[in-house]
Image 1 (cartoon, rainbow, N blue to C red):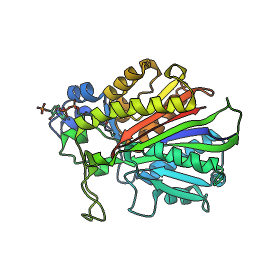
Image 2: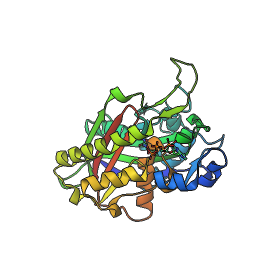
Image 3: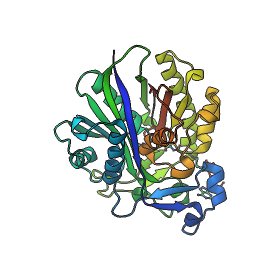
Image 4: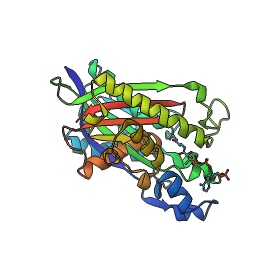
Length: 321
Ligand code: UT7
């Protein structure tokens, strides 16, 4: 059967690290509050010369190197972002040109923090139907550009970065590697609980991020547990079979609560929220690449990716490496 197989991953972070203590000099907050409520200790913040496309290009180059695949052999780029370089063209086309693989398919996906799951499922569908052979699936964000740096309820939570994976269509055995199942959902009734208060069609400004954090938190735990169960059932596995969960990194308490609901030991959850904070669409591939490069995630492992974000949107993908 034809499956989309993960060939390699890469990631990129801005040069500048900002600690909780540094933020406490700008807004009325403290290292204690941020660590206790979120698990975040620091975040990477892009300088003026670091953009969503530049981070995506760096992460993609590393993913191609890890995969042993040349850029010219990539015929599909799906880039998840809520902070594109420009309103259009798609940031994916800027990445395509920089990598020198022009001519294939390239587009952006907007599903905010679930963007990488939406991008991965889109690429997987296109690879399995033969529209493309090798894909770069990227999550890249510069959320620092859309934060209200005077709003302590949001500005302490987010960071910048990018992650990428290379997916290749391969003819594999039933118990072989590849994306085994993906489930995506959205519930637009909650689209004003986490949003940006600007845009080209309304205010003609970029706008700033606004969030009702406590309500997002409540929905996140319920929705994530449900989509994880649904994805496992579709693939015919149980939570005991999972080697690693690679979750969207919004809040350490959401990671703990979701793992508890599924009866998964905390040791099976890849956690980077302490270092990266919430990097929206970049957080899942950033965490995956961290787990691969530090040797925890290995070939043959059964890995669950999951995320929930603005819209609300949420989803999960079960992958055999
Ligand atoms: O990535 C997309 C998905 N996003 C998420 O999943 C985020 C989900 N939400 C959360 O992670 C949490 O709700 C937050 C971390 C955003 C907030 O934690 P919380 O435990 O829900 O706190 P809260 O909003 O209920 O606020 C508790 C108190 C409030 O003060 P009062 O009203 O009790 O006096 C806030 O004003 O904490 C205050 N507060 C702060 N204090 C110090 C809020 N932000 C801060 C801050 N520093 N940065």
